[in-house]
Amino acid sequence: MLFSSAGEILTDSAAFMLPLLNDALEWFTEECNNHGVGTFVKETVLTPLTATPDVSDPATQVSVSDTGYNDGAGMHLAPQLPTDLLVPLFLWERQTAELEDWVEMTERPDGLPSVLPGLRFRIWEWRTDALYMPGATQSNDVRLRYTSTLPQFSSVNDTLYFRGATGCLAYYMVSSYLSSKNPDAAKMAESRAAERLNQIVTRSSRMKQREAISRRSYGNPRGGPSFVPPRNP
Image 1 (cartoon, rainbow, N blue to C red):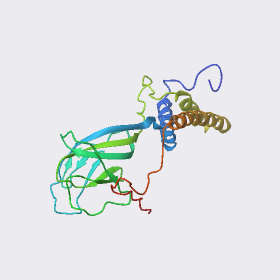
Image 2: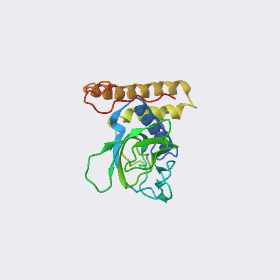
Image 3: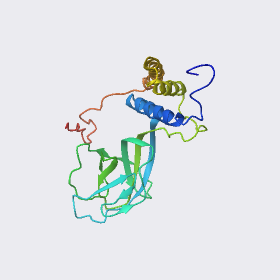
Image 4: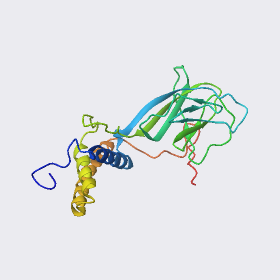
């Protein structure tokens, strides 16, 4: 009840309720991901990524996007990227329909080199909101680990699948609503939303403190390939 005790303004039936709620949800998701909250990490398998028809051109690249899979020569409707994908983290691959171990792929953020298609994709790049890889001479599956977004609300009966986020979203919604009506009150509500968000971030950070984390060495004492640091742009 923002104006008087005679009536409520922020009701479930208000036309602006769902837009405000989804705006708060988007802000909350982005802030949590920027602070490394692990709740949004998911995994899926992209299958099958069929063989590249042209295996003689080292410039051939394949891609997986929101519209499907491009094998370097034509477009296929499946597989597609997950609809809730925000940023890819790690990729592994193995031959389609085989029960072999997953082989980790290497990210090339500064561009893919010109290489002839081999049995594996081997490397990957994230650009134009799609996964790009060199071609392969066999059909492979790709295991994708990524940060996701929360599903948007379409009705008042939808459920928020995140523990402890109700107060944070509510205060941010109030802040957005008051921004053009009472800027001082809007700042107070936004401050409360930030406090609730910091509580969630602290909870996630303390959970991660139980994990043993160490820097990856540049050499490999077991005789395998050494770690090569990424090239800075």
